[in-house]
Length: 435
Image 1 (cartoon, rainbow, N blue to C red):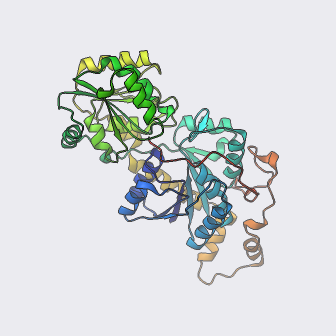
Image 2: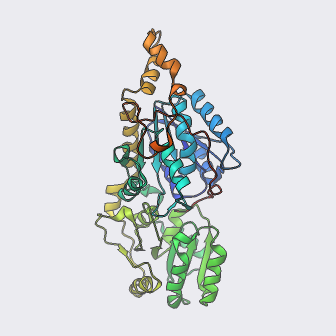
Image 3: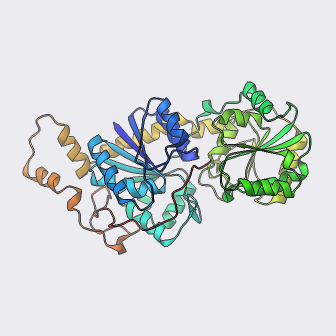
């Protein structure tokens, strides 16, 4: 099958790196298009032989991008269009449906309790999300937590399936040589105890709380390594200065050598206020590091020995870190439960299977594609009328149908309405995300 992945951008982030790993394991032919900001992950994907194109959007409310995406999809003759992240969902789902793509689906990576990809969940954001959701066949939620949040937002449970993110354990395996190299780079000795955090530097990650919690524990033999970039950098540097540990907190910036950075740490801390999955926690466990975390939906119901949930307070986190520091450096032991539940190949196979199951259904979009692919197939009056009508003939969706579904639908639950007439203003485009 020919698949197009539409994603908002390809800066370094959890959803973006998840897409890259998926492309390395899928059995289908794939292309990728970004709305803007191709970023470092685009180069990684191209380096693996997959094509990445950039629409070059310059603002959020750019309807010309919808038309450009529609043309790209229609000319490409894709069997599947798979969208990732809010902005690409808003543009990609209706564009694919209007192009008559047989299968249209999304993955919901980043819906929180109060924010969606760092934008507050305003009525306008919610309405636009729900209106364009009607143009997809199904949405993949990366965890039961995400599924529940989507249902609370107004998405029908029958239009959601849960397939977790996958962990490419080969990409994060412990590497003692890389550990030594990274430690040398930052002036860290082999016997020094390194507490580490990794991810986008933004308020949700609460890295300022980690600095505050760790400060009394830091000394010449115990350091804190902060890996990532973002708008919070100046604030975090100030917090370190206020606690007198500027020389004990190392800001490594954005890094692409995840396995090496994890290998350099002795304790991994995940301190997010909200999470939809918790990929970095699973990667750290795959690296064999002990982990302290405040929230990680991916670990719910999973029996692991080296991860412990801690209170989301400086005091609670400090007590847990102190216990680990006093234990000292531990041998690296990967968690087998992580590979069993979240191995990348198994997760990719589940998504590939879903594509094929959706394509096998009888809808006007799948049937039209099958008819076109039959050499010399005669087209009867009914089929010709259906093809001529196409998506353009669908009636407009009434505003009150948002969240409840329009009265007229395809048998598969797809929308009976076209793309909304306009895209209301919303926050500036999201920048590169961390895990």
